[in-house]
Length: 390
Ligand code: FEO
Picture 1 (cartoon, helix red, strand yellow):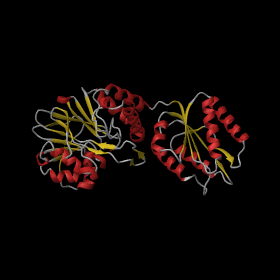
Picture 2 (tube, rainbow, N blue to C red; picture 1 turned 180 degrees about the horizontal axis):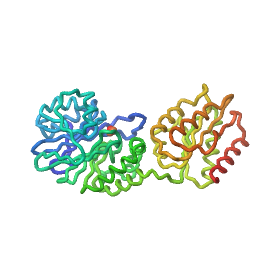
Picture 3 (cartoon, rainbow, N blue to C red; picture 1 turned 180 degrees about the vertical axis):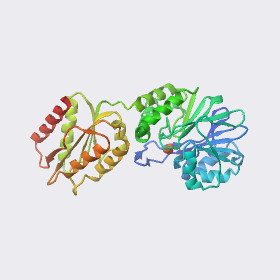
Picture 4 (cartoon, rainbow, N blue to C red; picture 1 turned 135 degrees about the vertical axis):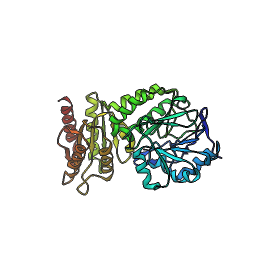
């Protein structure tokens, strides 16, 4: 029932559409997700990447729409994370003559769940794999975003199979970039970059340079839409994003118990506005951390606030700080703030985590006792205004 779609003569999209998936490792996916796999019909039939274990029947049916899987001779694993390799065991059971093509690092990871059984072809940058009329080549892209990552290139097709790079979590019936709304597409690509790729921007820039050297008219990632019309646009976007240059913008993220920390957040937000700095204020109880992270990517300033609760932060602030610690760009400027009843513990904790995340704290934590007054809000506004003018 599941059908394949030909994206170039002899090359088929056979991926999994995950219409109902909404969450992966802290990342909200309001538009679902896809795990793309590609089948190359040549003298030696080749499958590039698989999908999560849960969706392998869909993948196999799409392959069977084109060819008997038993005829597949190579399964290329560009990346061993389980969204692309989680169904390798099931796929290999149906492709008894297939060799697994991967990097040395990929082999090491794949062996942890495949054992020694598969036949391996270990490749590195510049290696060639002749499969008939085509010769595939490989470019290692380590830490974009795992050590094993590589991309597969078919010069004959001017096609780059880029795995995670240039992906988006976006499930659509369309397969190509020019078939969907460009704003949604680029916003999804940016959110994906901010939440998956950002900590490895330096390595991604190197990979981007390698990709720019290739003669490409189609980039097919393993998540989301395939780029064929907006290739300069997504390459330029990656050039901007990997530079991690902040804009004159701020994020104020907080949670509040009785409204005092909210009033502080509002005063800080107003101070940014008065200084002409673009700002977004997020109540962490209501907002999604992966959406916030997309703004954090650009923000020169991040202010995080919580009241003290059980001598620590509110749980949603703790979750945000954990996420921030793993992803935040370095060298930006931070403010910790919040109210307290009898101990200003949460705010010190916030400042400590933000420093660990690489923020340069602009001040000691801003605190108010919880029976705050309009004068307290004015003092916060004045204090932040002064910091921004220093
Ligand atoms: Fe899409 Fe790193 O897996």
